[in-house]
Length: 187
Image 1: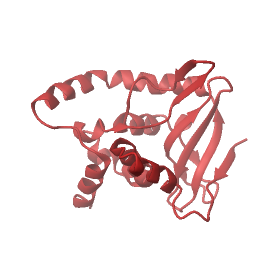
Image 2: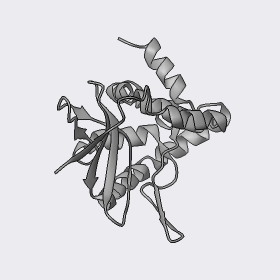
Image 3: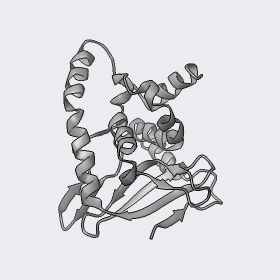
Image 4: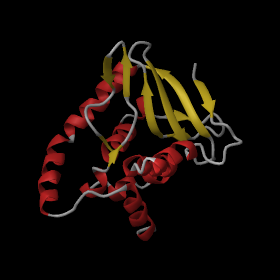
């Protein structure tokens, strides 16, 4: 049985509190991740248009995917999680990383997933095209972690080539630049 939680409908934007903190700390990395959260529906929808562009594929996301207890930390992912790897993992494994919107029934692709290896709980956080925003609680932390880490491993060679090219000129991009590119190249 799926358990859904909807964000407070009275808040204008559920990311405002985190965004204000990131602005206060001048944390551009976190601000860029919030841009992904807000625009995840469009970024997923247009994945095929940008997935071949390493400068967009390897945009790092500042996701909270580490669980700590008793001084021991366990991470759902290895090292930084890149936008392309995160989106590709979700799209290639929809049975594990997507859910149906409780309002309209459409598929929701999450902008974040985290949970506990102890309980096995995972929260898939997402926004639906209909405007619903919230998360679904599912079980299977370990199997989702294994899939995400395997997808990261698949991208290692591509990332190494990208890093070599990046030494010659600025290659890495931001979510803000991806959104601008998507806007300029809209059909």
